[in-house]
Length: 236
Image (cartoon, rainbow, N blue to C red; front, side, top):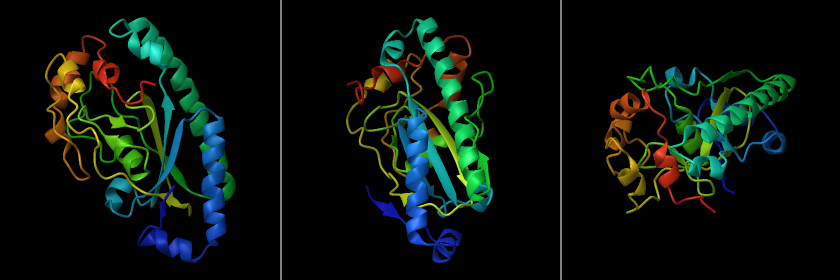
């Protein structure tokens, strides 16, 4: 795995710390989170973003928990999927608590990034710093045509989480472009035509990929998630 050392504030922090400690702490936190149920953990250099978006914290910690494939494949029947999501949410809370304990022990400041808004409250405009943006900067995957985070191993069938910190942690190489290529299965699966079929690169606006209004208006009345089911990546 490749790592990068961030610019600005983060680089100054690293100059005043032992590189071994920075790498060791990142590795220790990654292992602890994965032992608690995370399938992916990465560390993001946020110096490319505005201080307003990052709340002044220079490092992002992104993680993901895998969705159960059988529950996703049961869609559009909602009961198995909703039951599975409830179990995943319990694990997410546990991981956040573990992260807070570890960061407190190191004397690092931190803040949690929200997972977004309810389907009945469409995000217009989008969140200042979405969890999936931290995930791409932390090397966990790219943004798919569906505007969801797509990881190489699990596709979009993951629940993301994210936290910001002022601690010195060795950061991972960001993902800056999509590898969805010519695949349009999620585009074809969308019942309301919200997915436009464009490939993402870092800096592309969400509106160029996806009509969030169409999606949220449809999901206000029914569980959908058919783009999760359609994606061939990670089905193994």
